[in-house]
Image (cartoon, rainbow, N blue to C red; front, side, top):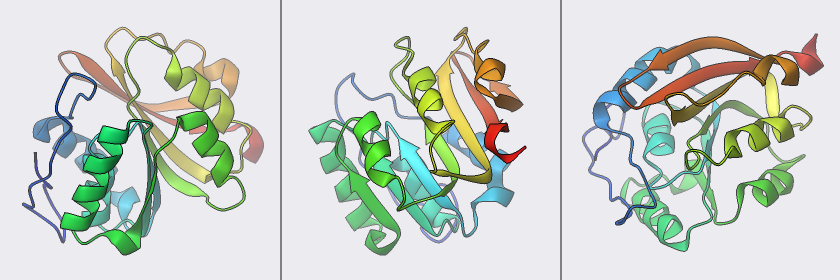
Length: 187
């Protein structure tokens, strides 16, 4: 696993050992960042269920102004912190080792994000809970883009009812990236 492009290109990253983290492959990560490359520079980026931190660190390498990582696993947090130090990204990064719900609440009034990436454990509806929270929070800038990585076949039929619009959908062999925006409070 490595950083693919930008100022920290080719730097290797550590990953969490075991089955609790599913690292995004370099090919899928490259496809994802090619799709959002025009949104990255100068952005505030939120990486939820961050695992090793590779998605947020790729964003830093490509010019994101600031990234907040959230993961409740102590092993994952140690890995993320090590990767932040190794890539010399301490000034651009903050790590919250806590559950996503309390982490989101703790950031209210302190941050507004242009991009949110979430890759929760599959099949637990955590993405729906996060989106229900985000629709009423102050954490999203107007026009913010939310990217959800989920298993193929995950039900997203609730998005419109919550006030979200699907901008794009990119399917892979076993998973999908849903690119969505929230239209509710800015109409």
